[in-house]
Image (cartoon, rainbow, N blue to C red; front, side):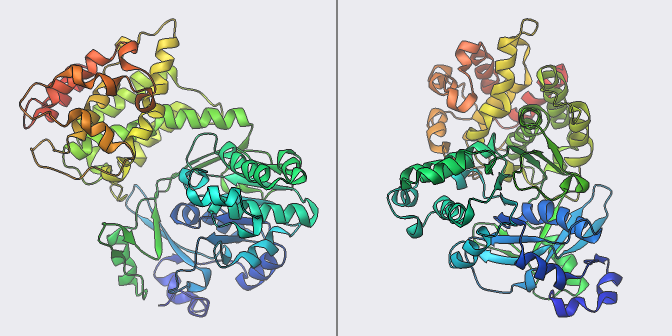
Length: 518
C-alpha cells in the first residue's frame, strides 16, 4: 500500500484495514481550491494536520465545504510528497484508534522557493484567511535576518515574517482585498504578535498606504485564538502498526537528538480551537466542525482558563516531578497516587478559586476531562521531558498569574498555597540535573537553563542548601511572574527545596508528605 492518489482508488483494500478515506471528489476539490483559494495555512506540521486539516476534512466529507486548504511549508526538503495526502491517527482513551487519510490539503507551497505561486494566491480576492502554526518564536523580530529585511526592499525579504509581510503587501497592491491573518499558535494574544510583526515591516518599508491597510480592521484582521490538542512526536508503535497494515515508506526514524520523524501524525481525540469572530472577507463555517467563534474578551478568558489553571500548570507539575522520578510517559504519572494528588490539588483547590470562567466552556468540565481522560490516556506517547522544555518561560504564566490573583484577593491568602510552591521547589531540584535515585539526566532545552542552574551549582544531595544564595533567582519576576520574597512564598519554597535535596529518595518522600497533608 502506497499513499498516493492512484493507490486510494482501491478503496476496499484501505477500508478493510480500518482507514477512513475522503468521501468527496478530491480532484474536483483541488481544482476549485487552486482556482479560487479561500484558506491558506503557514506551518503544515502535526498540529495543523490533526486539528485544522481534519476539521476541513470532516466538512468536505459532509459537503459543507467544497474547497480545501493550501498548505505552506518553509522549504521543499525533497522526498516523497504522497500527493499532498497524510495519515492522521487518533489515539483514544478507550484503546481504540481511528485512522484517517487526510485529503483536505489541496496543494503544498513553499515560503522559500515558491514565492511566485504564494504571491499569486495572496492576490486572489477569494482568499479569506491565512492561518499559522509556526510557534511563538516564528513572530520574533529579534533575528539578524529580520533586521536586514527591515532595511531592505520587500522583494528582498528573507526572514519568515518578512516574506509573509511581502505577501500581504502584494495583496494590498492587487486591490487591498480584505483578509483575516489568523495565528493559532499556543501563545497569549497571538493575533497581536502577528499584527505587530506586519506593522513593523509596513513602517520600515515606508508605505503609508500599506500600513493604513493593516490598521484598517475592515480590511485586515488579526483575531486572537486559543488552541488545545495534544499532538506528541510520532510514536514508534504507531509506525509499526501502519507498517503492519502494509503501508510502504512509513517507518519512523529517530535521529541522533532523539527526535522522531515520520510521514504520519498521532494525536489525542480531545481538541479545542476558540477564535475571535473577526473575518472581514468571510470565513468557512468551521463551527460545524466544533470550533468556537466568539468575542475577543471570551477568547482571552478561555486562554487564561487553560494556560493559568486547568491544563498547562498541571502539565508542568507532571513534567518537573516526572523527570525527577524517572517517568517516561505522562499517562504513567497518572497511575502514581502522589502525582495524581499533586495535580488534583493544584487544579481544583489552588487554581479553581481564581479561575477565569469564559462562559462557553465550563472550567470544571475542562479540568475534569484533562484529569480523567486526556492525561491518563495510556495510548498517548507524550513525555514529561517534552513538556519540561522551556520551563523558565512557562512558570510566570502557568503559576504566576494564580499567585497574583491570590495577592489581589480580599478573601484568599497567598500563604495558603502549598503545592504550587512545591512545584517551584521541584523545579529548583530539577535544575540540579540529578534524579531521585541520584542518577544524572539531561535537562530539556530552556533559554535560561544555564542562568538558573548557576544558583544551584553548589548544592549537593545530603547537604542542606544555603537558601540565601537562591534569593536572586526567587526574586526573578521574569521567571516566576512575581518576586517570591515580596509575595511571602520564598521561605516556603526554600524549605521544600531543602527537603527535596536531603538525599536519594527525598523527592518521593517530600512529595508524598505534602500531598498527603492536603
